Amino acid sequence: MTDGPPENTDAHGLIRALLTPLRKSQRVLGNIETIASSLLALERETRERLTSVDQRLGLLLAPLERLDWKVTELQRLEQAVTDQTNAIREDMNARMRAVEAEVREMHSPIERMSRDLATVVELLPDPSDGPLARLRHTFTPNGAPPQPPGRSVKRAGG
Image 1 (cartoon, rainbow, N blue to C red):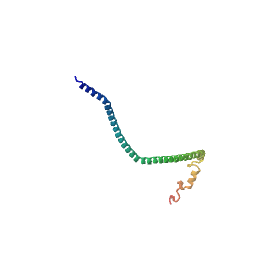
Image 2 (image 1 turned 90 degrees about the vertical axis):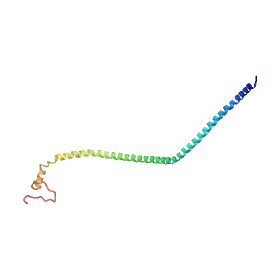
Image 3 (image 1 turned 90 degrees about the horizontal axis):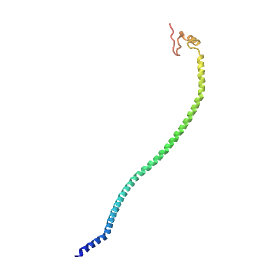
Image 4 (image 1 turned 45 degrees about the vertical axis):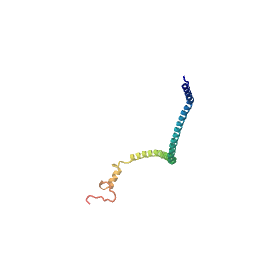
């Protein structure tokens, strides 16, 4: 019996056992390098995207500032219009109250005048009968209605 091959096999197994932790660390190191290179690529891509976003935001910044100024100006104008509208409303309300007071003051005299007019109408004679009718008949030729000035009245037989 030869002891060579079994010793060789034992030595080979022993070397393999001693190198196994080194192989595992090489695998871990390889995995770490792969992760690191992926992270570096992700960082480059992210940096490019952020640079692009910064550039686009820079282009939008000036219009946004002008828009902000315009919004502020519109708010100021809106407040001015609101103040003017309120002042006009208050003035109109004051004037309407004054008109209402005048109308209320005129109501009683108008009612009295209406009653007085009704009394005067009742006292007037009937236009088709009475002294006014006789006067009209007396001052108009042949009882005809009076003519406007500047026209001559044609008389029968003339």
